[in-house]
Length: 359
Image (cartoon, rainbow, N blue to C red):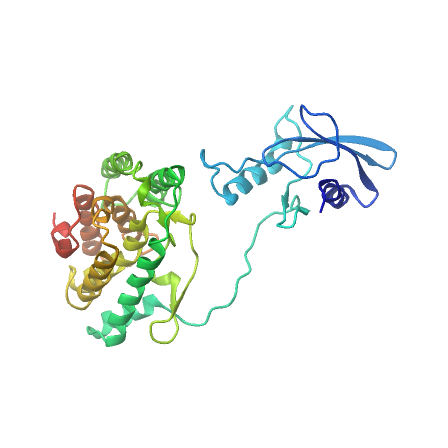
């Protein structure tokens, strides 16, 4: 669809069927009928609504990465916020509408949106945490349990082999790990002020250590790979045997492999600590199988030098009194030992995790 036709269709959505475009020009250029849009360029639009001429500006954001604008959702967030708030600030230019471009070049209004929603396929199956609950209760493993641990490890081997060359995205993912509202600092802020297991000073020291890790990791962009981003047992639904479907991919297509590896493996540790006070027996079998298989097939020994802050984040999740209010003080204590100790570990030894649970 030609640009002018697309704009006319959109203008009628916003101003009514009687509205039409009179003239469109790029700022700094003479008026002309546009053949297409350049993202990030502002356009001056003159339109008629009945007997009245009106002038508006159509603006979008550049698609270049950096400055937190890397993903479509980042740019959408900014534009939605601008539409909602420009008019509330005295003397500020008013936003008329916010819209979006479709894949075939059409333009659609989203200006009256209050909340967004997602419509997805229904997936039948059983979340993986039910398997872990059953293993904890029975104290034994089945062949299927072991096969599933290998299948979950193999899946990461496959997707992490898909690489991307984008240093900006890798640096951002490491920055987000420390400072994002859903990750380390945001999670720490969700802990109650009355929390007894760690003081504010303890959390402050933990955050500072994570900042150290950010500077140690942020330039390793050669590691950027396809990730799920929240690969934990509540987002994994098994069907028959080792067939599974994933839910709720998070925070971008590409990132650090350690994010996915820790997201799942910390739960083997978490379940084992609850039952045995350390990583042992059936959950150690699963942990070792998952981890060893991944390292043998990827040959990614560098993972052991970058995994530490990701384990700290995942440890903060499972130790959280909000997400897991009913675990014992002793379990929480061992988890915090793990968090502190893993951040002081130069090279992670997956075969000796229990050493990190001690005071």
